[in-house]
Length: 208
Image (cartoon, rainbow, N blue to C red; front, side, top):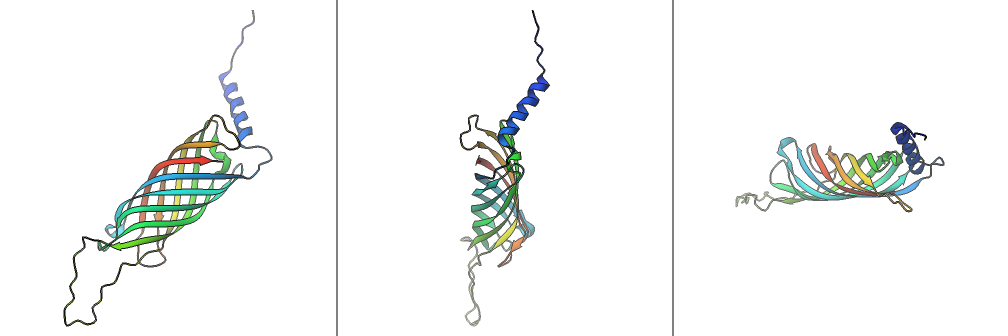
């Protein structure tokens, strides 16, 4: 009889090479990739600004073996109290560029991708309904109550995506998992917005 010795290390190495050849072909074609994320964020910053928001992000771009890019659109809704406590930001809509690890993010049955970007947003600001009523003196003809000014926030974004890939890819690989991230708002192109931090978590879907 002849004994057969299996080397687990050699098997793992062969499996890794097989997946690498599948995910990162030698001709390095550029392929479409699409991603979507459902997110929840805690927001806070200087001067007691803070609140919570829920949102969605969608990526559409192109990926190569070791690099990818996308255009990312986002929509947020919730309540972020402004520094003066008289107004609150209830929604943000944004768009911005993103760079990714490309197909390097695909590792055997899973994926781990770091996506970096910069967003330019439109923030919808409203007067707080529970804010105190301001009464003008009758002899002060110059008094005027101004409406809250909508903002144009902007800032960097970093998202770490972790997920599992579909075992039976067809034309595209598919993955689902979780995401952890950070969205910074360094200021506003219109109006006054203190430096604001948003710590983000959520679920993600990816195709590419």
